[in-house]
Figure 1 (spheres, rainbow, N blue to C red):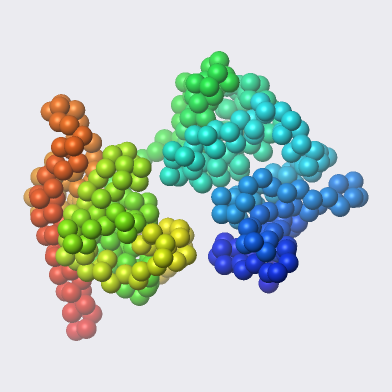
Figure 2: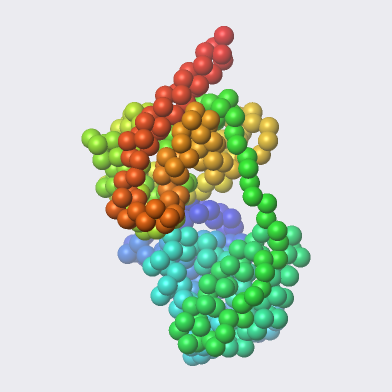
Length: 396
């Protein structure tokens, strides 16, 4: 085992021993993965405080506290050490002071974010890496507008303006929750504008580019090869495909029903499955766990999208940069070019139909179901014909 550079995959597949073991998990040096005989995994930081060896055990365990989050926690603790502050003493003080920024942030994460937000690991990561190291010595009531602005300026100055926008969005949600709970009188983030301007992405992949991507996915293998293909076929969001469960798929009815908690729109969404999509799903391997696209036997949904896209990019010749979300936009755009009406396309994408017609939630769920099925079937047939033409051109 490497002393440094433990990977997320190694953490995931680390097997328990008959005895409790500590595995070096740096960087930073001193971070250890603790694997108990029961299989439970946690994290600790070993360091020296004024010549004496000490150990700080982090709250939370794997997988809730991932390798990336553990490394961020360790870096924050070592930053305290550089300021001649004992990280273990900080932890004790935080536990004793329920109104500390970290204590309130952890309460918000546990009570609100994790039960209600699918992207809570990203929220937790940004808080632990970008926010709390600067505010860990403050009470939540001591944080003012100037503190928020200085924090955002530091992120922008580090060359990450879009992350500053994301951080501000998270801070506003956190502070609003604090106001609602009576922890704060007013939000220190109120009225602060995003520090960076963001351009709306308009990248639409040409059909030839989609065909090339499709052919390249075949060499990726499971799970990402089929994952990317289903993204193109259904035009659904990448997180919705990643968290797809067998219990939500009816192969006989050729229908995938997303529960409301699995959709960005927060409502039940039915996706008709084209013949191409059905054949793809029928040929997927089955595991004991509920998730279709997985590297953990179905126990958890697939992750590591950036790495998978990088592998895909190495196999294709697409000149302009593209993102995974562009597949959804591109599929929708090409369906629109084949005269799929805007209201049907909006239903495929699960965009809000608006309230002008006064239609009910039940009707919304089933609106234009047959029209959507027809559009997705035609899109699947067109896409497969493109890939077949691409294969013929390559063979010639």
